[in-house]
Amino acid sequence: MAYTTVLCLATFWLGGVATAQDVIPTFASFVQSYSRSYAADSAEYAQRRVHYEKLSAAADVQNKKVGKLWTAGPNDFWDWSPSEMSSMYGWVSSARPEMSSGGSRLQTIQKADFLQQKVNTSLPTSKSWNYLKSLQSTKNQGGCGSCWAVAAVTLLESATEIHGSQRSFSAQEIVSCVPNPRECGGQGGCRGATVELAVDWVLKNGAFEEFQAPYIGRDTSCNNPGEKALIAHQKQAGSSFGMHGWDTLPENQYEPLMRALAEKGPVAVSADASMWHSYTKGVFDGCQKDSIINHAVVATGYGQNEAGVKFWDIANSWGLSYGEHGHIKVLRKDDDGTNQCGDNRDPAMGTGCKGGPSKVTVCGMCGILYDSVVVHIKK
Image (cartoon, rainbow, N blue to C red; front, side):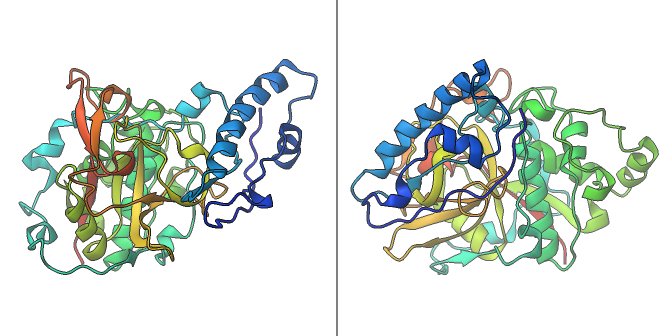
């Protein structure tokens, strides 16, 4: 079936009171609004309706909650099957790639300067990098489990812009070329990998710009854009655009992520996005402490709303029709790194490598503090 990207229906948060804007449209209205091509008397229509109505019922419960922080509503994914929805993740969590804990991640420095600052150094109450030109376009990974590659590209593009230059990076090249022999985060390509693998590959090999290898959202051979061109930019590697390393932030710690966002720029983070598909507006608090990390995204800032509810501002990779212009605000608490922790009992669904532990601790709403990545670009 053909999927058409359209704007979500408008919703408004009014202190937890359900309004006319919170009413979920019928499936027939959804089919018309989202330009679905399946016929009303077809088997596919009936199957899609089951998926849609299941989400509709859950959304109705959410929107009737007193004091709710976020509003649920239909979007381009509401008639997808569970297997189709799972293709929107592509990131498995726990035992990280070996290189992410070793010296190969930083070629010229041993530890990022901002990580060595004292924790009592004051930080602003809010920070947003959404003004960057590189963040104005909303990326859409489509039905390929390439969130790890798209997150890496978003991270690299924003970092190079902050440090004085602007260029694009090809998510398709990363999907096609990054090896994943230990099956960290999946089996590679559209079947999942990790941001760490992506940025380390770019550091060592360089990267095409988007126009040199446009995104097609499926697995291709690495030399598809042109083997000679690939060899040419590999010789320059990351130094060709000022990249001299990358780092993971301290695991499950609140303050380092705040500091990185305040002082350095956007940060690639992990999350349990299993419940994100119904989000349209507000501050999402729909995850349990026990979260299965399955998605890579980019934190572009943090802040609080008019009611004083704190949040992380997250750029997703599900297109402009998702959430708040492609973003989701995820609940943030000052004790995220201590009292907001649970177990990820299925690491193989996220960033975990083959043979890794069967359970890991994840902290923050949707496990958002578990695994965070920054890149280092010279001015």
